[in-house]
Image 1 (cartoon, rainbow, N blue to C red):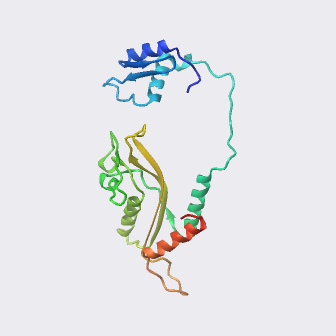
Image 2: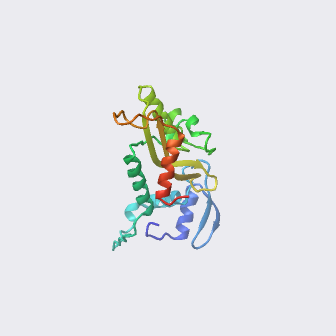
Image 3: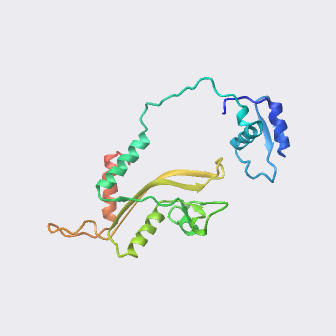
Length: 217
């Protein structure tokens, strides 16, 4: 991973000095039991960093050549997200960027039944969990606007949501998500037509139109 090969005996010796119990070893692999007083040693990269720290980064020779491989393939996901963002902006929606850290109530959003991930050392109870969905953030944004007598809203957000996954290395699964919210009137005041009230059918029609454009089922 760092472009430098350590001898197995050296690695084992340093692991023992760190308090690790050697469970299994081969010429290419070492399996250890982490000591209880080192909760920071969780992933494989944590152990690699520890060996490099002990050996000394300054003692690792620099690479004689630098190879840069460029990828000319277009990122289809990025193109899709940018087009979706442009389409909703063209429909008059404002994009939101809400905090990914939320309260327990917002993390336990009942619509999706996802198990939230709690931070070990949160800054506050209002920022103690990773969000499991985007919609609670949009609802909170709408609430703040309602308190300021702003009832005609068109909001959307594109971002990642997380949920607990015991089988994942990081114990977390991240999903790219999309959410939209509309309240009040769908159009500004205009002399040529009457304003319409927003409802679920208006938003449903918009989603169906975009699904047809993107060939989504």
